[in-house]
Every structure is written in C-alpha cells, then in structure tokens.
Image 1 (cartoon, rainbow, N blue to C red):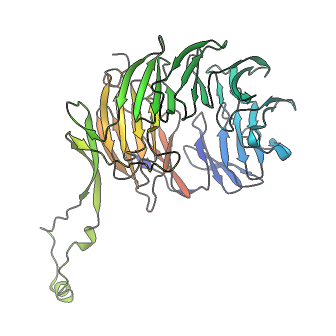
Image 2: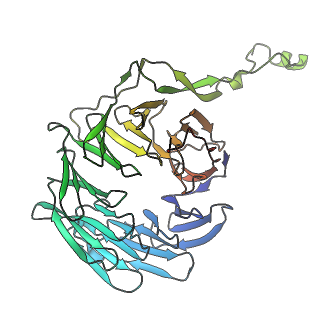
Image 3: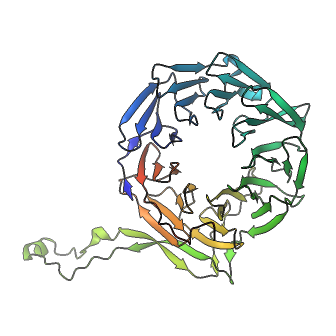
Length: 464
C-alpha cells in the first residue's frame, strides 16, 4: 500500500463519483485535486466556511453548504466561470443535496418549514411544505425517476412521491408511525422501508402505491430501532436494535430468518476467527554490534543499550481462542441516547457479509456470514472504532480507530497497515468508487492510499 503526503483540510473531503477528483474544503476555499497526480485542477472561493460538500452524480457539478451564513454555492468543473448561489433568506438552509439527474438541488429550510427543489436549467423552483427532517427523510429510486419525501402535518406522518422529471407530486399516503425516523427505497425500487423513532419499535414496508406490505415489531417495551440497511441485492433487510441484536428480514415474506446476538462473552462452539490487536515489541539483535572503548568509557554507568527501541512496537493481530470476554461499557441509566445497540452496520458489495458494532462494546467489530448464518469474525481493537467501510468491488473491509494504523479484513484473514506519515492519526476513511484508493482523514489534514486489487478467487465469489 502506497501513501501520498499529507494535505491540509478543515472540513469535508470526498471523491467524485467517477473517482477522477477529490474535493477538499479548506476554510473558505474548495480545492479540487486530481486523484492520480494530486495536482490542483480547480480552486473555488466561497463566501463563508464550508460545512458540507457533495458531488453531483455526473461528477460535473459540486455544491458547498455554507450553513452558518446560510447559503449554498454550486460550481462546475467543465465551466469554471459558471456559478450558482442559493439563498433562502430568513427561512435559512439546514441541508442541501443533489437530485439524481445532477441538474436540481434540494434544500431544507431551518425548522423544517419547507423543502425546495431548485433547477440549474432555469429559474424554476418547487416547494414541499413541512418536511419531516433536515438531512434525513428523503430517498430516491435507484433509476432516479422518483423521490420519496417524508412530511408531517396535523400531527401525522406522510410520504409524498414526486416525479424527478417534473417534480410534481404523484401521490401521498399516511404512514403508521408515531414519530417517523427515516425512509429508504429498496435497491430494486419495489418497496419502501420506514422505521419509527427509538421510542417505538416499528419497521414498516410499503409499496409505492401506499399499501402496507408488512409491519415488523420485535418487542414492545424498551428502546427500539437504531439502524436499518438494505443489502445491495435487495433480498435482505437488516435491522439493528437497542437490545444489542441484529435481525435480518427476507424480501419475500418480510419475516426474520436470522437473529444475531452481540454478547460480551463469546463462547464455543464458535467457528468465527477472533483477531485481537496487540503490540509486539521490536527486538534489536545486538550480537553483531561492536562498540569502541571510547564510547563505553564515555557512557559508563548508563548501561541502557537499545533504550531508544523500548518504546517501539509493532502492531499486529493475534488470533485468539474462545471463550473471550470483550470490553463492555454499561451506559448510564440517567442520560439520554445511551451508547448501546447496533449503531454501525454495513453490507459487503456481494451481500454475503455484514459488519456491526454494538455501541456498548465500541472496540469490537462483528462480521456475520449471511450465507451460512453464522459469525465469520470478530476484530477486537485497542481503541474504539471510528469508521469502517467495505471495498465497493469485493468483500474487503477497512477500519480505523484514531491511531496511525489501518486495519483490514478479508475472508482469508486480517492484518494491520502502518501509516508512514508522522503524527497522522486516522479518524475517518472513504473508498473511491473503483476500490483502488482510500481517502484518510486526520483532524486537520488528509492523505490517500493506493490499494492493490484483491486477486480473483472462488473464495470471494458470490456465485458459489
């Protein structure tokens, strides 16, 4: 793995969808770098500090959210002289996103007063009153033809279906939620999943015409749903809950076919490989080292040969046998939003694996094999896991913990990679779309790492 030098950043950093560019926020400036040469290809000056950056799907346009002002500025890479500025006035702007066609921008005003669709082709705009959330509650179909927007009126939640061509409301229906948390189209655009706030365990599956296809409720008392994710193939729906369990529903009957528990003590029988991060001291071979008499006389009384190496360690994974006890943090009962339950999860590209993190065990990452309905591996880190991401092309997982190391897992094993940059701690990471490069973020800098492609093997194939 090859690393670039570190570059300054003060905010969002992201690859373009075509992987050719990297957009970096540096105070008031938006810097566009070439992914291969890292040369600056465009430099745009904004009117305030950049809070949010998002590429259009065609990688031609990019928007910057200046939420402190509040204002949106958009730029074109192919026409540097072209500019766009969106100002909602007293209504403010809480969030902005691109439409799938890359020619419209959707903004949500402060206090969720309205959602506005702005056209870059003309001066037309469309308003949707009372959006449910600022940054959530909007989902587009995979083909980009329709948008589902959650709204609330008369103390009830609704879903509005809009055409992304004319932006007319094609239909609207009420949903059976007390306080809708979020919404997401299925990968095949045949169903919409909606889930309630943590105070009410409720997962609802609707058809686009408003029919409720299924209602799932694992239990009634206690905090409910914390995270929901469709598998890329669209056949599975994963639901992570505050009861520290992962439940997987199938797309035919919408019933659970797998329930995975996250216990603080893992006992046998267990086929999972447990990888524990350890520090191994580096030993210096002194057998062939010769010191002059003058050096020994000048250092009499200081018999500490190799003392500079005592603080040097090699980070590595150690395969541990079960039973094993994982570090567990009991959340305080008198504070809201407890750090408990499945707060982080994501599917691999082939839908075979899903990783989870139980927030009360923040140093452990669980990897589940959906094909065999079993635990495939557990990665036990020294520090809490900050971020994890699957390779977009194969079942390879990368994670970081705020240290100077990267940690990788594949079905064949796990390993650690040291970042050669001094004083660079990896707090966040992102893949580019073709899986050839990683963007790594420190507090005020970033770098990229070139990643070798995984060899094609039947072991990784999703067709066996």
